[in-house]
Image 1 (cartoon, rainbow, N blue to C red):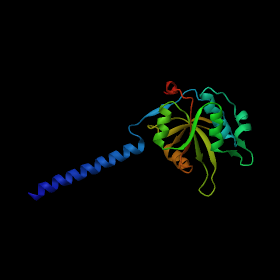
Image 2 (image 1 turned 180 degrees about the vertical axis):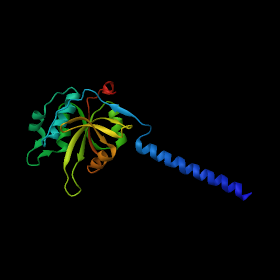
Image 3 (image 1 turned 180 degrees about the horizontal axis):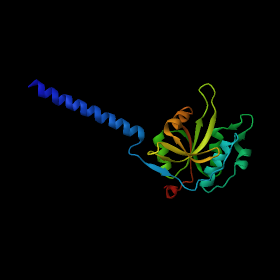
Length: 191
């Protein structure tokens, strides 16, 4: 009689273990495979240290506040740092009348922003642990089937960055993102 009870308990344990692993995998990938791509996001190619003005110009233009990287450079670029501070980007977007909030978010949060039609400015670290190299990109989509985030970065528009590479570089900045919106939905531009 003890043997059938052990088999039942063993079966329950194995089932719970299998279901537990399946649940963990689903959460880490954000559920079933999905994809989204926001259309008509301005792209300003850049091969200098002006990624801050270039990416912010793309976001502002998307939300109906046209700006050029040259104009924004005067406002937010710091020559001594050879770069742009996140707080200055947030303030510049707010001065244009947009809602702007810098936050540390998860990959699932980023996907939710993209599904809602909000291209998101993300700060990555392309460098090494002992030599950081910060770089702003605009996330315009993601594709779980292709295992990556779609970004406009430097000279590359619509580049697929594999999740592993993206997360490694994004984690080094504590997953910083600038969420900008006009208060109206952008969902109609998502495919």
